[in-house]
Length: 203
Length: 177
Image (cartoon, rainbow over all chains, first blue to last red; front, side, top):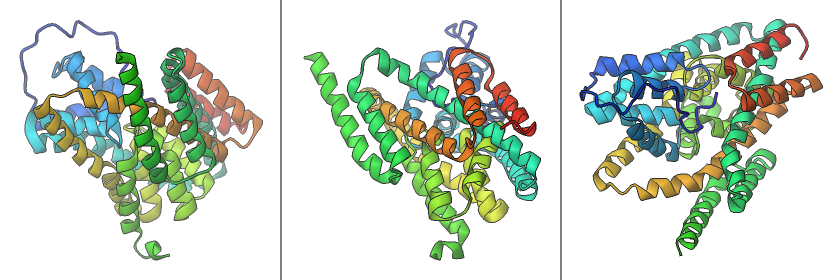
């Protein structure tokens, strides 16, 4: 569920120990990403970190954080971005495709089967009730991620950040303005505020 | 509506564009998915959207696969494939080129600044996602209570979230929700 929160340190065997530089092949990339994706109930990120840093040692923890930061600031599903960036770093375009196919392919097959089952049986009352219960819990998990991500802002008393957060919430959640329009205003505004406050802190 | 004549094209266009605006990942894009799928194109009802959200959270893999489910309900397997590739493709391409560019320039300042600027936006978007799914899924006091308990448990404990989803499903199955 919380794939967007920054990577949480999992209990790590000493990942900084020097490891022989091993270059994963295409099949290896595909399989590694398929495995972490299928293990990733409720967020693939933790598994990606475990697999890449601790199990295979394809990256150090720092390299992983840097790569993830890049993928987090780009739009779109972060972990998908990560698979492409990671795979292409080792094996070029083919590597990026292999990692991407591993990450998205197998779970997509599962999702398609579930969608077909839902299309056929979705009207059955018991199933509808069950899914309604799951949705209630799932949205609770989403709110927990929101709270966790808000804590640093609250601790820093980052008033401008919280105001921007609230404004986006109102514009999208309550007024239901289209995402593109809201972002075209909010991104430049937030960037300007961030750069200004950084200058003020430095000065 | 012209988009109804070729639903696969409408899926590709909708999610391809959304992909580039999905700041903070798939869960931030849920309000926009809801707007497109329920309000604009009438692909799904509110209840179906909540169901699809639930299924996507229950199944393994990245959360972005909610678009696979939306795509399937619009145009079967072709729709599932088209929606998924459209939602992942453009941003994956962008990520590829940006990472190559950054590898060469080695200026790590800008990603940090942009990321700091985007964090409040993506939190606000995710909160809006929560609100929108709540409005479609939480139709009773018990349902609201389940949401609150799940949020509190996930915030304060390290219990595997899958257990909470299963508990919610069991309560729904028992007819409590």
